[in-house]
Every structure is written in C-alpha cells, then in structure tokens.
Length: 203
Image (cartoon, rainbow, N blue to C red):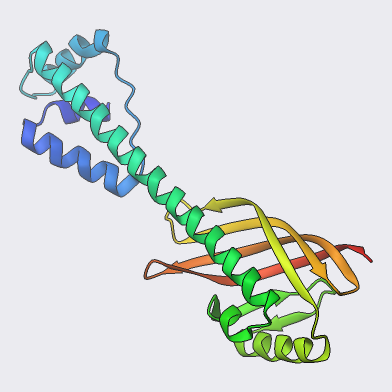
C-alpha cells in the first residue's frame, strides 16, 4: 500500500518523496496496475486522504515508472564503468608484472593488501608484497605472470568488487591456475584489498 499513500500526496511532494525512496533504497519496485487505480482512490477516501481523479493517478504512476527506470539505468551505467575500470587496471598490472615494475604493481595495492600466492605463501601488507616481488624478480629475471579476469561482480553500494579468473606463469615451474581478487573503491579509485592464487598445473 506504499504506492497508495504516495498517491495521496501533492504532486511536488510526491516527486520528492519517491525520488528519496529511490535514492535511499536503491530499488523501488512499483506493482500497480491501471485497473486497480480506482481501488486506490477508495483506499485513500477511507483513510482521510484527499481523493484524486483517475487521470491524476495515472500521471503519478507514469512518473513513478519514469523515475525508477532512470535510476536503474544510471546504476547500471556506473557498474559498467566500474567493471571497465577494474579490467583496465588488471591490464596495467599485467604489464607491470611483465616488465618487473614492482613500484607500478604496488600502485594498485592498499597498505593492508594481502596476497596468497600459488604455493600458499601469505604476503601480509603492501611492504611485504613489494619486498617479495623485488627478491623474486632479482632471482628469476625472466619470469612473469598474466592474470585474465573472467567475471567481475560489483557490490550493491558500488564500493567493492569481486574478480575471478585464470592466471598463467611464464618461465616458472607453475604453469597456471585460478585466482580471485577483492577490489575496493575510495575516492573513485579502485585498488586491490586482497588476492588469492591457486596453482592447478605445472610445467
């Protein structure tokens, strides 16, 4: 009956109210059928609301659908942009891996970044990861890894994301496997909170 109560408001108040509902809840599902509008009018009368004619109720319904569609489209556009940003970041990380640019790799890690490597070693913190890869590249100057995302899921609030895919090792004993990554967005910038790599095959 939420829609019935909204229909009893003045037109400007109605617009502001439903806009706030959409903004706060993220989704506002409207399930009124036009043939039920006369019942809504009766509902309002029984509860002391000012009755509205059928044409006014239809106008409110159309406005509701428009606002909901506009919000839904906007949210989908933002998620698509976030997806593209994360995929582009992964491309850059792969490039930094291939060139052994540890500083470049670290730009995508938060200070408390955690990585579980393919052999189950745990790198706790950005500094620990930087030290690990600096040593590794020095000992093995030809190795590098490529991570290929298959799926990226953006959270409802748009502040975190789940990435999963496959990885391949070059010039190393580990041939490849699967991985999962947790991204977090702050100030419209996506960085890695954690990653887990699992080795599934060897050369």
